[in-house]
Image 1: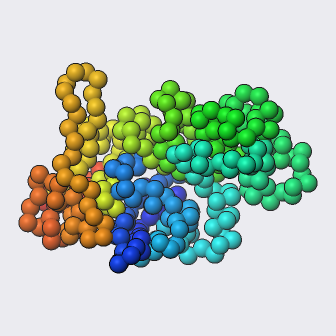
Image 2: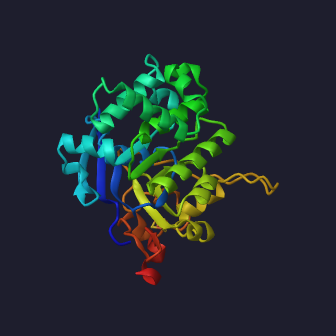
Image 3: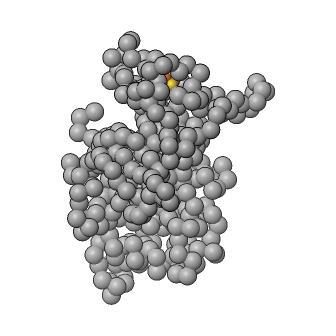
Length: 327
Ligand code: SF4
């Protein structure tokens, strides 16, 4: 990759709890190229959302503590930015949409009031620029294919369906141009047909605006269909990264292989396999490779040392099984 748009280097985050720290991110490395569509997968609690919140500087601190690492966005270290620089980044460069559109919208303000606020925040316009704010708001609602935008401006969130609320959230995030959209399970709380519409909408906007997208999803089918590159996380670490087609055709890490076997099949080939064991305790995570207590291929070295990423230019895997042939 030439100059990445986003480059996360060795990011480590802990959560302070009674009696100590939860080691939730342990040296995460992650890159996104300009205009690239990247997928991020892994079990619930593996650190996907924590990583994204750290990029946006919305991780609550406390309990969050950033122990080390860098987040370089367009050549600038996000963790070292002044608060006004973070605000500018959120206003003009990076947007995030969340899983639950109901929780993301304020129930006591109309959609119009919330959109006007977002546009004022992004553009620096005054409340008195009502005509401008209304024009941009209506255009934003039209762009996300909501019918009768003038009426929707007067609605409260509760008056809209789940799919319409998620479209409003996308309009709020993208009312003004951005270079990176972080979509954190944007369709998970919606039924599959609406989920598909939302993903098509994100795809269209990303293409039209030449925007990079990080898509977090539990649906491996969605990731396979909508992304160019995939990062697999397990227990706060990146364990595999590859071009999407390559990863699905030949998953290398034992965790990725097990994850793909968990996908239910509709062809009567039996019940999908689960992954034996449990997600590790972040208070006292396994030494070495964090997957070793659940790995059928573990060796002595696996509990002693943390594997680095071995690989080819298009496929990297953090596993000692590939240490010799791939270094
Ligand atoms: Fe399994 Fe060892 Fe590879 Fe970890 S490093 S996935 S324990 S073989």
